[in-house]
Length: 512
Image 1 (cartoon, helix red, strand yellow):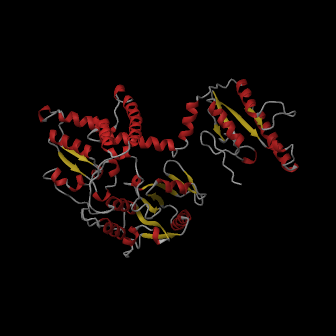
Image 2 (cartoon, rainbow, N blue to C red):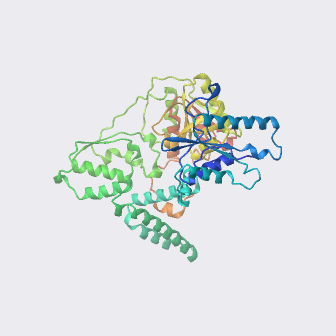
Image 3 (tube, one colour):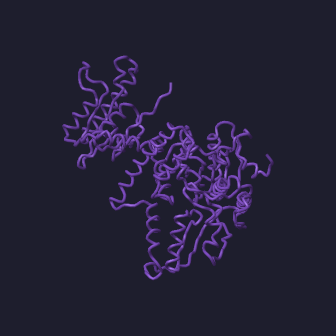
């Protein structure tokens, strides 16, 4: 039988379902509490004491202890010895709070001797009212919001992310003011059955409602989002000229230029034209990996024609990677003839920094073995675990090997003092660690097999630049993953060659 760990509405791991019920009762009645917060003083034999619940009442703590084993007394499912031990613990806690004159509530799973009394939640409510603890019942919406906040991977949030992406794409689109006309024209042009077109119109109407609601929360309340900032700034700049002297800039510096979109390029171009500013752009075409967000590598590759008279300066030294790694990664990414040729140099030398790690079924057991090895060699090494898709990180955290930490931190249960972060490759751009582990080097992820988007999304998605080279961006994504490490990068590869990424053949210089 599989037992589910009891969780409170605040997503706390509780010791029993009854304690979860107590926590939920307090939460739903607006009572702030702390679960198993250490008592400020040590108790007998210098031991720490963790009351089940602590509530602050105008600076005075109220302690709540729940005793649940009494439910086993009547049917003799607890031994007499254990019963006496349990009653002794109850007596000593009761005496401790009485001695220290603490505000104390004792709850029991068993109702009363005759079975007609109140249950422990009713008892808790009565005791809180006696102590004038302020309670205000939360609305269903507040409770529902709390449940959603505990589950950021819920379908609801995936839908929200999808809608926000779609709204952003429309607002970045040149036809943003005519988006309804674009939809109507598209549906009308399709060679589909009338009922299919009607269904598409209904889908569009639903989105229009969401889009209009979103917009109603912006301009009428003097708010704008990021896409609006760029759009309206560009419209405003078109009304200016050099004679206005409003933009008196000498230099315009653009960082991370490889991520630039068309609208941002026009923004920079307009500013430089009006102010006659010199433009300095810093970027790496090998790391152009955000086409889904509108970045265009052609704006990098055609820089000299877009900014006439530009001079190209190379930074050839790399301080993160070893020479051996950058040689291999550079050779890999430059298979695309459009990529700018570079000869990077490093003072760091390392033998075989790319580690090929094969797994048969469970790649996460292999990850654990790699972490043990890293810890044994240098327990202070910081580790970065990367994946092409977030779901591989999520699956790893669902095993009994790891716990989810704060933000991107991951706890390896065998060595909880290890510093480990886990995230997608896109999130890791610009970051680095001593050691990197790259999950799931399969033909599903490298190159990535995209899920089909619905027609509405495809209608407004950013139009990338066609490099006429297969999987050009996937190649750059893999390059970014390889180069996050200061020492070694461990590639998790399935034993089954039919499932392996074609990129592995290139790194190993073998023919398929």
